[in-house]
Length: 228
Ligand code: CA
Image 1 (cartoon, helix red, strand yellow):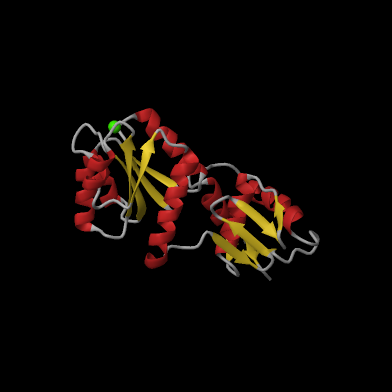
Image 2: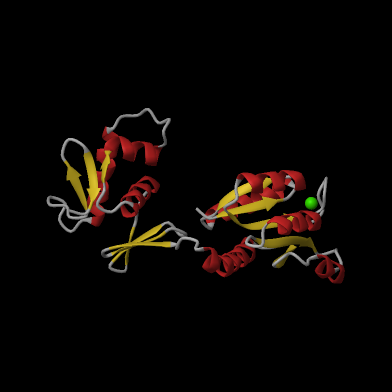
């Protein structure tokens, strides 16, 4: 999943951004201070875009930006500026940043800027595509939607996760345990039967003939496989 770091000391703004990042299909990494942001970036070198507030309790956003740029050119940086700050001064200080968004901002505005940055930097660093395609199916990983021959198929979150796992592993036999731990999590201690129940439902939605499934096939005594 594409990662975005949000550095903002005001918790309500930060969580507002996080909610909207998740909704737009990004994984959000949070930091409340400049030093924490730099540490989180070392932990997550695959962060593609960083959103930096300027006024912070320790080092300011410009300094964070400068330090990020000292180690990496690849990451996209968006500064969060307040309307009351003088723009001339800010643009002068913003040398390492790629873009800025003025508070208060709409979630759509912010995600549009992030998307644009991701497109720009993504091309060069070989970021993965937002789509998975298998036969007549197209999965949009950003919007969590699935289409078959161009028609949307409504899926639950669990069905979507199972479908994604299959589409990412075509031709590979997946044990029911594999599916359970990948979709429900390693700590889930429910019954394996839940896998079969969901696959039966998923087949009704995606197969042409549920009696003779051709997309999700059964591997007897083991699990399931995408394709014959
Ligand atoms: Ca602040």
